[in-house]
Length: 394
Ligand SMILES: NC(=O)c1ccc[n+]([C@@H]2O[C@H](COP(=O)([O-])OP(=O)(O)OC[C@H]3O[C@@H](n4cnc5c(N)ncnc54)[C@H](O)[C@@H]3O)[C@@H](O)[C@H]2O)c1
Ligand SMILES: [Zn+2]
Ligand SMILES: [Zn+2]
Image (cartoon, rainbow, N blue to C red; front, side, top):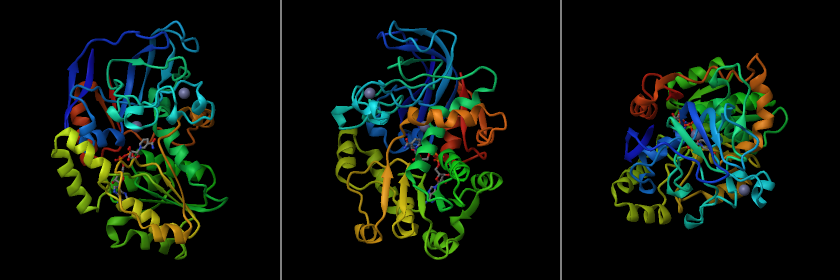
């Protein structure tokens, strides 16, 4: 089959690889019909290369048709239309029993002291082959696959794999008070949906912050108040000004470790990217290599005793943080990988509703054949051709 494989920093290729087979009674094989590129893939593409192996198959936002199932997979059968969550979780361990699927104890990557395995996501997360491919072996297939109805196009359901549950979690973790305010930093796919969901769930003011014109525009046409931070020297001050000088009740950081406007860490990431893998892995372990601009904006702009929800991914082990400010302001912070299946029942009614209340149909900007994945990665990373969400069709 054809699959999108990692070959080095900013080097992904479409390779011919062996078709996956059922290896465990809990496996399912899915023929992929749509598979998206995510901001998290960009971290693997650029700064987390030291944790990738040459030939690793990328992708964690797939859906398709079940081809074959192992003997222990009973909730889906060949022919079913399914979306595959990016968490690989068993559904029956201590963590899964508490709906904490990103920490599944059956698939935790203990070698790196990390949480549950994730599809297509580097050695840190189990190095399981991902879903940017013609076929996918789904580990823990007795639990993961989400059956979706026939009828609406793939794009209505595809984002149950990651974007929608992730954005939903970011809003839940933001603890926005009834009628309160929230700033969403970063208007990539995650920030777009987080902003729409915050509004849908009752936030009175939702302020979306980014610097990319078409991303600001997309948020604007979906009813979000926008702030172009490139027009302000100090984004945190500008956000506070919009909220009576006090700052919003909650701030969602949907940017993560590769924020614009962090020149020193940006250089550190470039240097780390050039080191041999073993050295670079140690660097990540002891140094602060995250670009913290968005996180620092969140800390400075959130109102006293407010909440910061971090959904953008961070990876440095020793990032310097303004603890005095965090402590004195009494900020609550919640963060982590999304527990995908925890939120699916809440979101599904919004997708089967034909009025499309989250306007999910306004997110994808590029639909490409799998062969054009390298181009898709490049334009998505460089924010060229107006790309906001790229979906590949094997
Ligand atoms: N926690 C999870 O489970 C989970 C799941 C999926 C994605 N993510 C993470 O969420 C983040 C966003 O993902 P995405 O797909 O939307 O990515 P993306 O790269 O498309 O979006 C990031 C956006 O942030 C903007 N940005 C950069 N620096 C900024 C700054 N200083 N201030 C304001 N905006 C800034 C960029 O212009 C871009 O529009 C990534 O870090 C990704 O890894 C986390
Ligand atoms: Zn993703
Ligand atoms: Zn589990």
